[in-house]
Length: 107
Image (cartoon, rainbow, N blue to C red):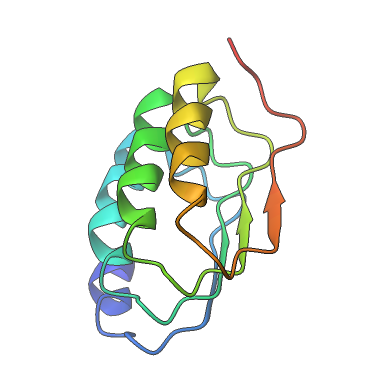
């Protein structure tokens, strides 16, 4: 229900879903909605048990978030490949000023 409602919030500037236990499946569902939130400037997905698939889902949605200035992925377990997928997309975001990864696990 939340994702359905979010898909209509196309002017949303900040989205904080930290500590919600999204996991890979939830993040994959969210990535479809994030593509519609093109005004988003702040995204917080910290402490959500995101694994490799979650990191890849975040990375695939970042291409649509050109105004993103802040991305928080602290305390997730996306592994090296998941974090690599995300960081490779960040060079395409000229507005990005804050990017948090501390307490990340590469295993």
